[in-house]
Length: 114
Image (cartoon, rainbow, N blue to C red):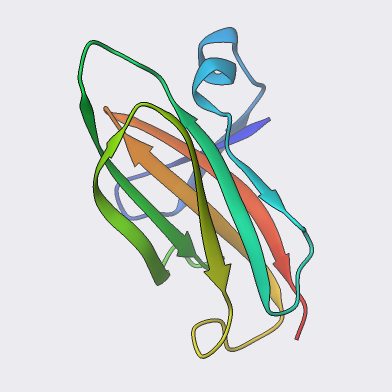
């Protein structure tokens, strides 16, 4: 299952995972739920480019960006980033980790417990 967001970052629809999306969605968060820190793992496919422009951020239920983890060029392959809640996530609850690259958006739900 995946979430489709509109331009205003509001949830537009929830859909079943397609085969194309499963290639893109090697995005995982562990541990989840988490208290202070968690790790985000993802794979970027080699699409004929050496560097891929990405944006990785955390959004709240209202669709507002509450933490930008990274934005810039990354190489194809496996990547890992740390998400620290310290000072960024103020309230316990549901958040979403959003990865954008090559015109694709992949979102994973995370649960932050203070």
